[in-house]
Length: 433
Ligand code: AMP
Ligand code: GLY
Image (tube, rainbow, N blue to C red):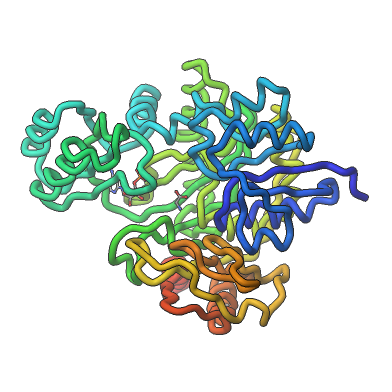
């Protein structure tokens, strides 16, 4: 029976649609608002036209509606201190305060914490002077990774295969100021080779609940080619993260990080998303995010059997110890359908056909990302448009179900990868033979 609780989800992507979809299954939740949401979210929640970084308006709305729990999707409001602001007003909110969100908001802060507390990560040096950085690049030689310190909409990291490329990256960030003040400080980092995986946990600063493992597909084209995107698909679980490796990641990455943050005076509550490079079976941290991954959250939440509202409320209240997260053994695959031209420029407003041809079920959900309604039609409004997410008894079944559904969806210029989850399938086949 409903107990009339109200939830506000902030954001407008596939991750937020998945959060709303899962929260909507909680018998405790009566009304869900989403700011600003998208066309898919509007089918199951009340979308309100407040931008995700308009903290004052979000606060007024939450106060007026007496929201019981606010869940923040993207990193920007977290780094702007939305959690600090809501807490001051005694409004329950899930996510880290601005001090903790620096983990994603400043790569220098994040790398310094990793070094100070002994987390496995690539060697690096921080620069504020272009000349000194250039000198260091020449000394080290390629390949190297150049990173702008601040948030740069996922574009501030350049993997340079030559000294020339590294120098151009430094010029772009430090001289041309392509990312504004986010490039005031730059990290030059050793390039790690291996396979990437994502590991998300929830913490209230004391208890840690590991989330199901997952793997993203960063580049636009098959076989990991072409420019990087926000993520073109994901699956869960990720067989590269074995039980033993998960245990190691908890011991050498997650626990030292949470304890280290505490020593720095930061009681971190929220998601810690570790972007990892697995090299010869060992995990190295590439980055930390202070929020759920997108699109990783879509397949991960498809596999969650517990009540997400209970879990997020407990984390916000510092009572994570009281709840358990249970996962189905089934696998899940999410394939992102993107606009023509993405991750570069793309046209907005192209009508999407075929969405009515199937109802979302336990096994298949089309999560919306960049969609809106124009003349009563659902249209594409973003680079990443939809995330077709399927559950199956194994990863192969889930993949087939997702791609079969995609055959029914069409919009002009629709592009997607055909090889989502192949890495997992190949790995499992090798293990079996
Ligand atoms: P980040 O935002 O730091 O995760 O970087 C974005 C992407 O750049 C990662 O997903 C990796 O593909 C790549 N990357 C970052 N750091 C490194 C590194 N040290 N070695 C190799 N690739 C990296
Ligand atoms: N999928 C990568 C991210 O959420 O940062």
